[in-house]
Length: 546
Image (cartoon, rainbow, N blue to C red):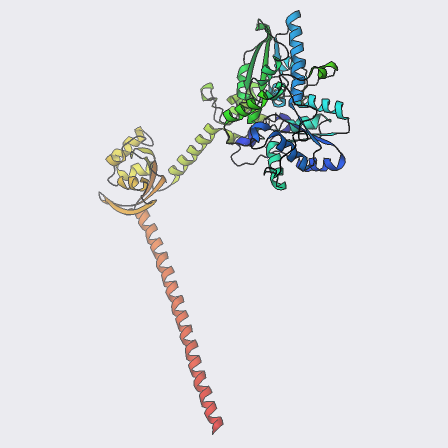
């Protein structure tokens, strides 16, 4: 279950859920409704369309979007250029004047902003207060075309849906997957049959500059440097939440000798690899296509764009849920509930999804996690259940591996084999590692069921000294593990059980015979009645003729 107030909208759960139980909200119906409410609806198209729809030229993409009902198409990268110019100007001023703040974190990726504000709040003050590219672009479009135009974002990011929810100037946000499905329903995945007029099918109000390279790692940094050289500002790019987490670990503003700008993108490889894109495509090819597309653009926007002073402030706000502080005793109690009594028991394997066992314990106390999420606990629990069942079974039980070495056996097995094995069992309960073939002559049957082409089950009666054993051999995992249940049919208790079992079989068989005889007798009676009736009818007809 996704907890909204804790979700950063990175989309990892959508991509990696094996049951495909997580789905992205479909805003296509909302967008279609927008066409009825506003006469002009503009698409803010992410530049990564070049990697997601390589089969479409720019003109074909714009034409197809207009066929869906959009009035015009503009590049979100224009907003990226506005952001680059604004941040470059601020950093350049910092170079000239200096200042205490040395660390600067980009606000371009909403999922990264959510992550930092939610889980690394000490770094939140260092996030630049400049709008995201989408927010800046929407403001610019409203400035040019009026407040009555509708604006719909289309791109690889599902976090943009949160931006659309927060900022009223963005009406809705679609993923590339949403768009592909919409194109498919409308039959627009095919190329137009007639040549298109490039002057009509063009971006409004103009092509973006190097903001087009934002979707790949380091793209924002390259774009910044087209506006200012920033020679004394060190810049680094990290993509993927794990890389972001590691990059911030141990980083402190006070320890920096020179200003550092961090470009952080939540998706590994950048926006081109976002959760709203097709999977299975080469990340290298996606990156290359965006590079090639950005190469056809100008370095920067026309200077006239920057003549107007505009407000570009507004990093994405979040409603942070206050974290409950748990006492050490509560945490230790939660850890003990999953079998972790000492520090050595805390494996910190992260299989549960939390980095440490203590974080997992806190999540359990917050009702955000369950004991069943702990792999080591579930394994121990399963082992205890299996051991309990093995000990409780009245017959002898033995489990062996592919080398016919004992994995586990019960006391009854040792008792059946003899006093020497009982002594071994007392010294080494379970007899783990003992060669099965050295203590019983019928161990080969376990090997037979483990072969790839062997049977799954073998039932045999074998003579062992003065005893007769009934053995049921079964495979647990082919070429790996098999087990056997052994009963001494010469023991009075087993004999009594077998006699009762055989008696029940005889009773059932006799009952079936009696039922069959009754059926046959009934069938014969019916046939006799039919013959007699035919004779009577025959005599009756003869009497009538006389």
